[in-house]
Image 1: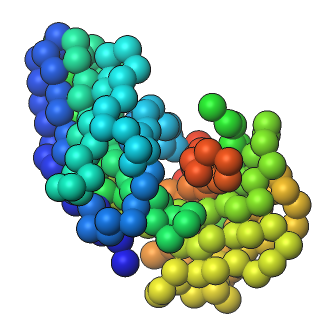
Image 2: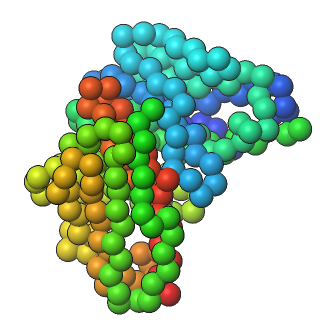
Amino acid sequence: GENVEQHPSTLSVQEGDSAVIKCTYSDSASNYFPWYKQELGKGPQLIIDIRSNVGEKKDQRIAVTLNKTAKHFSLHITETQPEDSAVYFCAAFWGAQKLVFGQGTRLTINP
Amino acid sequence: GAVVSQHPSWVICKSGTSVKIECRSLDFQATTMFWYRQFPKQSLMLMATSNEGSKATYEQGVEKDKFLINHASLTLSTLTVTSAHPEDSSFYICSGLVRALETQYFGPGTRLLVL
């Protein structure tokens, strides 16, 4: 089955700096990679996603890159703000409909 | 994005009782919904896949007789935790699949505390 590894588990950055979270996946058949943001006590919220036919996607301060050969993808947040503090999960779409999640990264933005 | 609601948002029950959690897709038809469980500071663990009009598919290690899933309409799936015990206390989250986008949208979660 699919396996997704996510690093780091915790990340602390100064407000205004950039944050990068990386994930690797095992199944080369995976073709869809979403990123979710989860705030305390809430459900995951889709923030950006990328499909296997593109290498990079950007939405304002958030970008995702995908390297299919190496089977890894990354989330980049620029100009971080306090409200970016949350737990971020990467995921890989597997088996036609299932999502396999990474372990999560707790991001803290220090003012 | 698509909107998914859950009810209740939190519930406290006594050990041995059953609890039903509802998951609704508000602005799309979800032929497939998923139920996850999340323990504190852990990732989401898929419990089962629910397809409208058919039996749910449970992940390995999830007791189908304890976690009853019903998906009788295109916008509603329910999870019933039967004979709940303290170890069932967790955060239960559902999601609906927008098949055209191959994207899952999550509900806000239900926190269950079994005393």
